[in-house]
Length: 233
Length: 114
Image 1: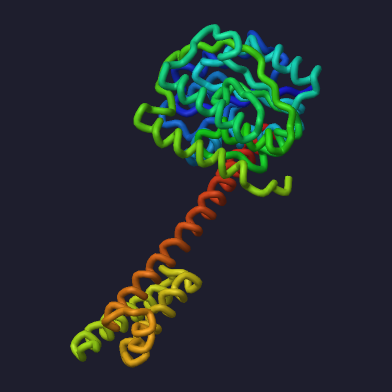
Image 2: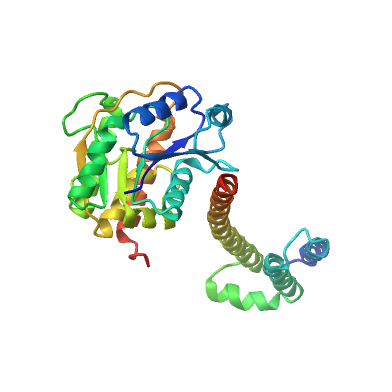
């Protein structure tokens, strides 16, 4: 079983070392790769100095393009599982083994780490919670499945989903949209409860001003994904 | 009817525009593929400008009082089409750029590890 952790990082100089050291300590059986999305701070230099396994994008692609690079890397190096862990230290690597076990034992295609099953740890702000609940309902309406945390970045997938994501992955705000894509392709998706921390430093990619755009864009993307013809994959 | 004055102004403008387009293609600042639509449009407008009676019939059937307005209307529609086609081209280009960037990054990674 080859298992890969994909860590998209854009200007994460304050968090990246902690994130990687945590992973090495708590999930040693996983390989990891940092996707440096053309950071303008010293993320790249820090990772080079520490000799971390890193892929450097020559131009800034945004979260979707960066994560997809990770899936392409996973596909070409024949990994059986790949999990996305954000570079900002929100995701606790301690949950990775539980997720991998669940994926393997229940023969699933994707396991999502959800903050809202046991409601422990950082629960996000009220406004964001409203947005997340809205997406949960929208996805339920369109696909019939309940995903309690559709914006969770902590997601582990098996080979078939790795291949699908390597071929096709949304550009920005990819999480809810790609879940609909996966559900539509009749993949087996389950959630397990996880605890997330508040981000350790730096700033989130979604500012309050962008959140309206985020809601509209993702809503449209989900609906279009639903009515889109099944892709060749 | 169009006045002779307007006909001359439009005609001169179109001819200048066509010359600029052809010069740019010659200097390779503009792809011939994309210049063709512009040249086609320019020639079409030039024809209409020289033979305004072509427009009279058309504007009458469409219920547009003045043939000049018909000319502007067609120009506007044409401009919209070109802008829309450009949006399609940009979408396609952005996908290609993304894929190229990813390939370069993965390739560079491979080179280093070997």
